[in-house]
Amino acid sequence: MKKFNQLTEQEILALAIGLEEEDERVYADFVEGLRGEYPASAEVFGAMREEESGHRRRLLELYRSKFGEHIPLIRRQDVQGFVPRKSLWLARPLGLDAVRRYASTMEVETRRFYEKAARRTQDASIRQLLDDLANEERYHELRAQDLSAEKLTPQVRETEEMAQRRLFVLQIVQPGLAGLMDGSVSTLAPVFAAALATRDSWDAFLVGLAASLGAGISMGFAEALSDDGSLTGRGHPWIRGLVCGAMTTIGGIGHTLPFLFHDFRLAMTLAALVVVIELGTITWIRNRYMDTPIFSAALQVGLGGVLVFLTGILIGSS
Image (cartoon, rainbow, N blue to C red; front, side, top):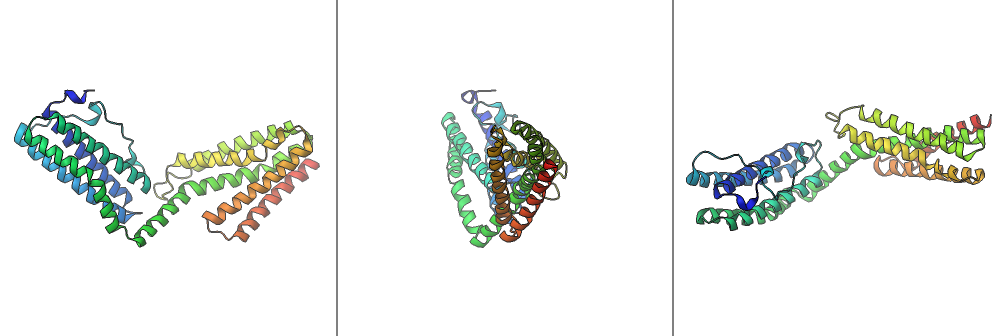
């Protein structure tokens, strides 16, 4: 990598052209990624892309007048001081808040580059253009806020917030809830059956631990392999699988941990109490994010939990 203070004026202009081109393409990808769910925000980033394109044209015109047609290939990764960028624009679907934070960071970095580059140059016309671009980048974020105020009316913001909530439900809540329900309910029978059959807390703990981890791995892979999210908009499959697997394990571990107590009756009492808390949590999530009426959610979750719980007790007591 080359140090910034070693760059010539020609290399500084070539780097500036490359930075503006990269930013323009990033904004274009943001527009494409947001168009379906957040059309108003896509328009905002489309306007910012046009401004970056204007910056690049002005830099190209000055470069040609000073150094001719050949532009050396010098990129941000070739110069020390630039922070590596994550390829956020490649993710689908795009998160609106993450995109806005990313764009803000881009503008700050580009402005600081122009300010430092202007101090490094001796040519008056190059220094003038770099100073002008630094000032424009300084107000670029303000311009984006103006565009947001114009394009993102309260009604549009409400629509986009609803779309964002829907994506959160699809990508995180649904797989997490499926895992929590499976872990909390399906492990009840083996844990309590083992506890009543052996009357030994440690044996019950081992059975519950094995059932929880096994169910977590199974559910995680099942969710990850169910679909790649390209058509359903449910996000990256391995993220969904990780969420589902983790919540499945947590759901089973919850009523397994009390069996670490040597006192069998205390362990059983605490485990039963944890089960009630788990079922109540599932009911609240279904009501909060899945719009299921609280009574209906409680009846569905409670009935399933009680049936599995009784199954474990009957088998363990036989």
